[in-house]
Image (cartoon, rainbow, N blue to C red):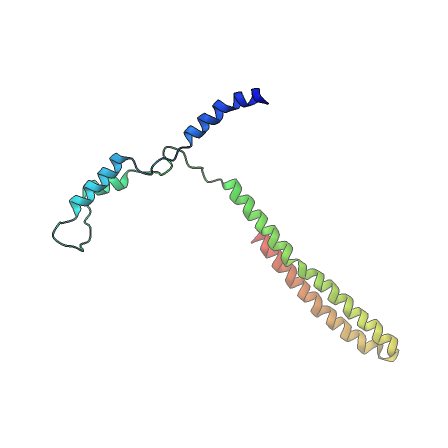
Length: 155
């Protein structure tokens, strides 16, 4: 344990020395901004708008990064494509939940037909027509839901 601490201590000390907070601007850059501002503002008026000068524009063109010379991470289109695919699949899955409702509705329509035929078998033809009409309506709602699910995935 002590030997591993002796090995790790110099590494930890060098890491701690590198993580010291750095100022966002170097003093030379601050002087450049201060000179540009003082040159642009007249001393007579209290509330005047600041006029742009060439030194200010030049100072604005220099890219000052608060992180220093550290490179920014590039945009990954693979990550964006993966997020789009995931959201399409989630949308399709949540839209397809309604297909279960269509299946339940079809089951209820035919259960009602069987119950009505058990009570009054002489109305078989008329009840079957109503059942087919109810089945068509429930199936149409299921097909609309399937269409919405496919639009979530492929559009």
